[in-house]
Length: 157
Image 1: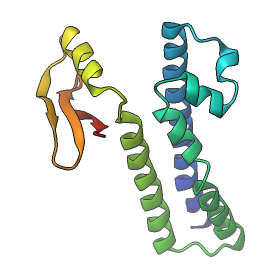
Image 2: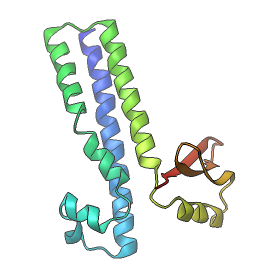
Image 3: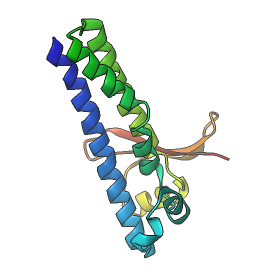
Image 4: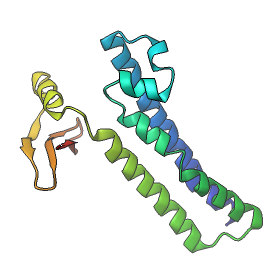
């Protein structure tokens, strides 16, 4: 059971890689579209000032805060050979919750109205149009190519 603790750790590393890929794709696309020079986003402070869509970057940075402790605990459990079934369940639960957190963090958008317009102009099937929810979110829903529902939202100010 000692080596089983490495699987949730590997899953967490893969999550970080997915978010890094998403951050890179979003950042490069915005820099090209808005003609932003790479020197203008050399630091996190200047990037936050120059870029409009920083959700993936914020989530990527967040993935290096508490998860570092997760990595340390997993390694300590493996080294001391004290892995239990409960610890494995907790490790997988942690990774699952981090994945959900990342998914939510990345799909919140800064201009949901513009995104809705883009989806409509490209012929996307809209499940429910733009609406203001009682929990302080403006959102709309669509479906991916496999028919799965996806909601996009923006926190109302």
